[in-house]
Image (cartoon, rainbow, N blue to C red; front, side, top):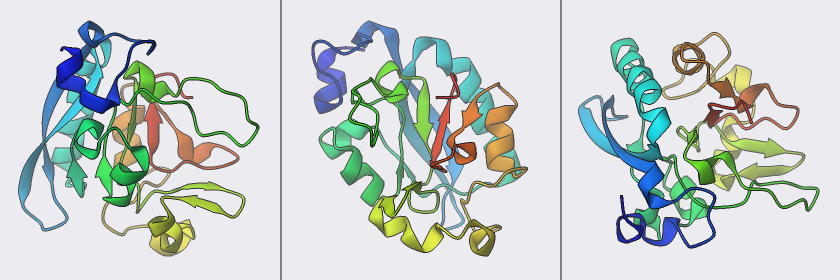
Length: 182
């Protein structure tokens, strides 16, 4: 890939360069019940694992709202989440409440956020995206389309390739999966 391919999702100083990233085209079941294709930008080393994950998600019928690179949202994670978009690479810092600045695993291309509205990040009273507030009571939404739950097919597909799920964290990030578990 090139910097031009990545648009506003990449800038000089990011921890991975464009040559270390690849475009991965996947087929998924949409919330409308039909087949769709989408594109993720991921680290070269993550392509094989994520191809297996999306093959498993397809086979199990897991629904996904949208899959588009964050560059289509001007590099804005907030805009991508508000659109309930599943995405991977975005050169950005981690969302933290302790004011420690570290690169997000997304900046390395080894993390993916799936259906952010149905699987919000919850920290205290803060919910990201805000549109996900109705999905914070996980027992009430278990079994709904696109919801990640322990023991469910979405979490299981990522676990089968060794990727960790943020839904197990003390401040759960239900949408987040990464090769490092962070």
